Image (tube, rainbow, N blue to C red):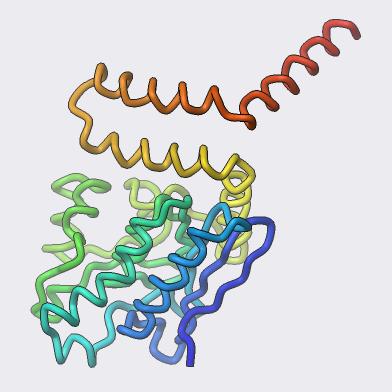
Length: 253
């Protein structure tokens, strides 16, 4: 039985975690499906962006307990492969968080470039509830988004953030009504997916590289090379010509 449903339309792939009886717990099998699917989508010419969501009633309630019960270095890193495949995906990724995103499920949401939260979403660490240390970059990602105090509140103090709170604190880009969640995420994804594919990948790589940039001068140098690359591409020449024709037309009218 598969644990991931994929639907592609308008150059956007929607990946739906599909194990509702276990609240979309991240099992080894599901993690492998996510990694395999994203690998295939990254090389598919008909996909320009990815939306990740869960079949109700949850986004993902965390790691599969059976896998945790038999935890080993090899088994844990195989679970990590699921959300690491999301974070390493060269395509823009959006999490449409439609319910609880807990523990490893929160990691899945954090791995996406952008998170849109339904108002019923709930973001929780909950590792301490199991007397389990977080893994997979959980503390690093939360600290980057929420700052030291916010990460401490969520990880150490067990604070839970609903959709509105997550958006207000920067953990999500926006909170929307539950029935508008998927369409909102799809609207953003479609906008990205219409950009030239190679430019989109190059821009995402630049955004990632900025995490290691030391100062403004280094950022300028990094962007210069990418911008020069883009000016030599046919897509830029075509769109520049279109813009010039529109400007000329508006001046004549």
